[in-house]
Image (cartoon, rainbow over all chains, first blue to last red; front, side):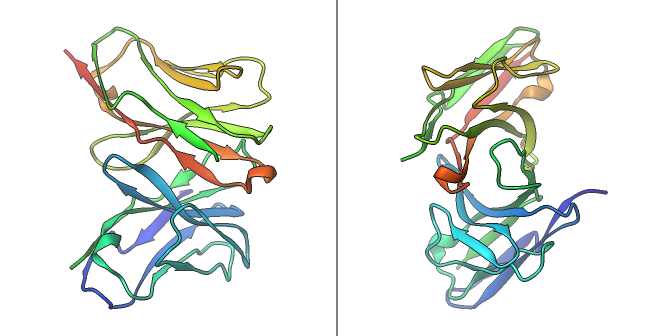
Length: 114
Length: 116
């Protein structure tokens, strides 16, 4: 089944404890992206990747890191999480970065930073 | 800077009636794509419909159609014959082309309530 998976789905952590959220897709998509969703703000793009070893900042990259060492995986790293990073996180992928490609979303990861 | 505006935080519609969800956008990139996604209470993001900036005709997908008015920079979603299962959050999104760096931005969303 073609899908985007995220692990973990739920995470509660404490301020400053490094964490990684794993995103993987099995559709051979070139474009992958991370978003955070907060009430009243919609989804905001954190980072995106056009292909392996190519990553770019979205609108809210502060406090996050990403890497794209292989095509299928796009982990999101919070080196020192803070409470304002409590949010619902979505990973998404599309065939390419072109404007005509729909994005396929993962199920979301709900993160709480205490 | 690119921007997506959804001016209706919430909308009510009677079952079986049509409803229009508004979306306006702003971009200087001549090549872009406009998308609508549905997010039910279960939380997943479901792709509904796509419109390209160079498309001459409005996109349609079943009960969904996109009223694309390029000069006004609007891309409203029309849902015909509303069903109870249409109650959800709806997001308008735009993906720019290479001029805009292939970023994607979303609007704040419109919550639709379908009444029986």
